[in-house]
Amino acid sequence: MNCRLEFYNPKWEIKVREFKLDETQKKFVALPDSVLDTSLEDQKRHPVIILLNQEPVGFFVLHESEEIQSLTNSSNVILLRAFSIDRKYQGKGFSKLALHILPEFVQTYFPHINEIVLAVHEENEVAKRLYEKSGFKFNNITKIGKNGVERILHLILTISER
Image (cartoon, rainbow, N blue to C red; front, top):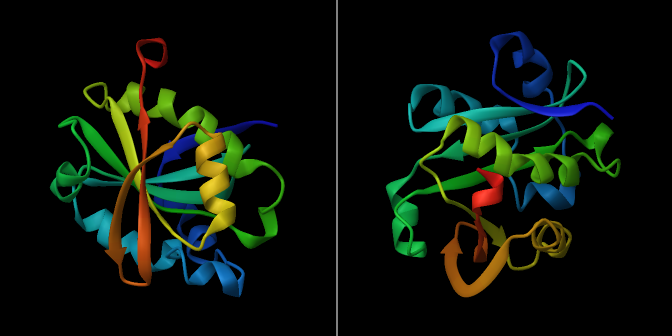
């Protein structure tokens, strides 16, 4: 499977804005259509497309945000947000593949970053398992999000990933 990550390009706009999620997922994650415009207007937000060959199958935003400084001991941290896979591509391993190649992508384009942080809803068992299997760790830090308690997960980037 030729799965790769690329920064957003307007040529994928229509397909990305048409992404769908199952009803149960909508409580936990924002659709690309609802975060894309904000991401394009903010230089600290970097929308990324998960591609299968040239077909967008997923989306997320890497956010260089001061708000996450209080959630970690690192000052060289980036926030992973709005991670989603279009409903028609779910269950095919794209989330796992994208998270596997994410550290190298971050180190290539953000060489000063040594930690990736994300917030996952306490009730989102599927996502928690996925992130933890991908190397993210829960360090007993939680915060209240718009839909309830969220766990803060950390992925420390090691020298071998740089």
